[in-house]
Length: 311
Ligand code: GH3
Ligand code: MG
Ligand code: MG
Ligand code: MG
Ligand code: MG
Image (cartoon, rainbow, N blue to C red; front, side, top):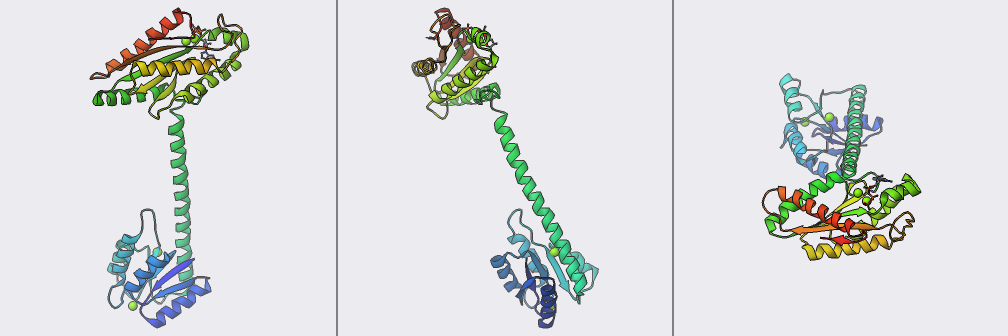
């Protein structure tokens, strides 16, 4: 523990230094306020013992400046050690930032007890800082998790809705198109019925991961939209671009080669995709129509035989 003793009178400085050493604290001594502030900046002590009457800057001013020098969240206990006995001085000492106020001469016992009290407060304060930091981290983690789907760990419906509105409004401001894909696993009911729900879950995870990996731009977003449906937001993408992304997604899922012997088609898990794109107009209503357009297209893809894309 480092204590800074700011005291102009040599006898007093010697006595307090001696008392501090007896409780295991090696003091750093400053003989005037300016030097005290300089040493505070250099040494960042854990405790400051501060005289009031000194040539040049008095102790009140020193305390004031030290409080200004502290960084946000930093706190160095300041104990005034003074010959001034008036209540007004004590009141002023506390108001300029002092934490305690002792009248000289101070006995070794009292000094030791007061120092211990400050150490205890400092310790509690530190624990609180640690706790606050942990709470902050936990909060950030919760925020992150609240945007993710529990099963597949890709974005959830909530994140999709938020992102859609944000990107929709941005695209409207910039006059750029927006692409939308709705992907739906083919014959997934049969997959579940045939292999069991758990294998179905694993299949959904693999499909989600694959769709996610297909995306190239940081602004693209794939979300779990419903049970075995995934929605993709493609900012700054027209229908040609959207169809390209859709085809790479369709092919990537087929190439996973997840056996599906209950499928009435290829013998592997496939997806059908509805694609749509539009240049967003003013207002948010168009975003709902974009989803509807992709959904209608998805229906067409299903009707046309699945494992395909329609627009
Ligand atoms: P289609 O080719 O027309 O899309 O047929 P389908 O069988 O995939 O369509 P349907 O909508 O009839 O079935 C969807 C199935 O997805 C039914 C449901 O049990 C299953 N499902 C939805 N969410 C989950 C999930 O979280 N886990 C599992 N294992 N299955 C799910
Ligand atoms: Mg003095
Ligand atoms: Mg103090
Ligand atoms: Mg479905
Ligand atoms: Mg389906």
